[in-house]
Image 1 (spheres, rainbow, N blue to C red):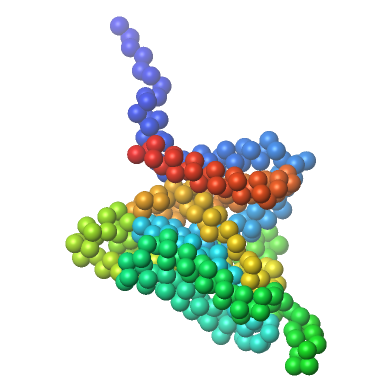
Image 2 (spheres, rainbow, N blue to C red; image 1 turned 135 degrees about the vertical axis):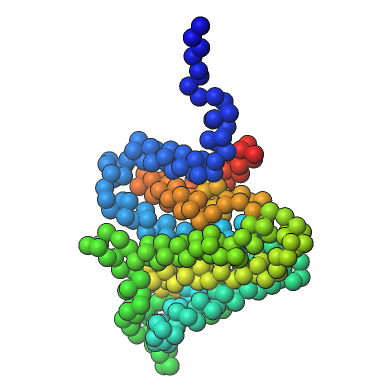
Length: 336
């Protein structure tokens, strides 16, 4: 007697759903289908739309790469948006108002980001303060620094003289370079910066001992400590690198806006978390990766662009972001 085998067993579907990469690809595919349906008079099918979507998502992707490191290690960083604003203001002051060359202003801004991340990581690692509380305090503090450094105003090309009058100066060359495009205007430099940073973080996670220590730390901190993992140093370094990536995002933000806005980055930490969990990095720590974060960046970036070309209000986008986080976390729980 001939026995027909089922085309797909339930266990096969369960294994497929349990794969974070499969879930991330499915989410990206659904978003692209959504764009094909709600194409806003063929706008979604234009090359410029995809180019702009990648450019706009790059800043969020930089923040998400840093967030991925921290979350894999079992932490969270709510300060990335405020650090972005602080560095954007500092970079604008250094480059526009003070006339510092890029070989000095760029490393200085990276050090500022590393310092902010180091303070958050130090408070978490050495004083055993919950990451939520430590980074919430840094979020408020860094925002205050941004407003203090800028005087509560946007730092633009309008420079105030000693007499109290304003004069306009040229946009610095480093700003024009970061905001430029290459390959006949099809690829933004900001996107290339994001790709390079993501590749470097991938190497650290996949090929460096510190990456393995982070996974062990997020899986079980006490077991990692007993296994000889330098828990404090590994945790501190994850926040430092997250701060550096937030600084890179801040410089990119300032260059694109051609000014340093102390109010920039509000809510960006929410988007970074959404990208991370949408990609498949679990909030419980110990699992995830930069490849998954790249998929999450594309998903959130395209979703935001689709909503934008269809004139969906920002308030609705924020509500959708909150829903996405909850759905992604529930999907992770169902896959276990």
